[in-house]
Amino acid sequence: MLRPARALLPLLLLPLLLTGCAADQSGGTAADSTDLDAAARVWGVAPELVYVTEVSGYTGFQQSVGEYDDEFSAAYRTDKGATAFGLFVRRGTLTAQSCTEQPLGEVSDRQVTCEQDGDAWYRAAGDSHEYAVPAGGVVIHLIADVDKVDRAILRKAAEAAHRPDAAELAALLPTTDGADV
Image (cartoon, rainbow, N blue to C red; front, side):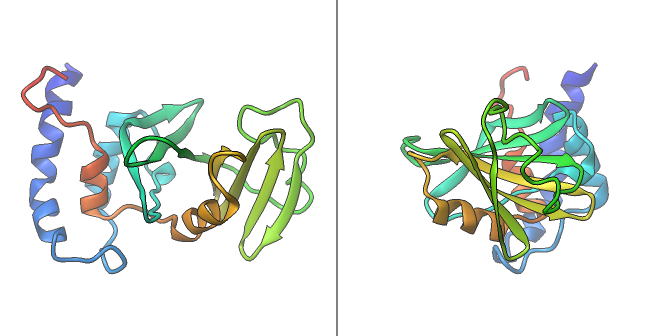
């Protein structure tokens, strides 16, 4: 029953995609709430958890987008796939008091260090590091291996995190390419 809805969703978004093509990356408008709700259902997440980012040299990996442990998740990787970082959004807050107490991704057995950097927190534990950005009841986590993605890339991703416009939303949705999705 869900398959036809998933196959039709990109077609339903086509008018928004076409009108959004004239908007540049920084000037695009947020996706219509109906379209955002529909996309969130496809991914199995709450609409308020859907965020995207942009960093030169990295693109969203469409097959990675969806629900992970009650969070919205998406991977961004270089064109050759050599390096990647993850974007995870979950409900909650992050404060100076709670920063070191919250685990960093899957690293739960290591002490988390925190450093406030503007409106975000730079956090590190073990071989992982991230920027965590509190935003209206959710926290956007941009996480990577320390040896593969440097802090400057994660910071740029954190600064660029935002609600998707229609074109960004459509680009992350699964494509059918004639296949039975």
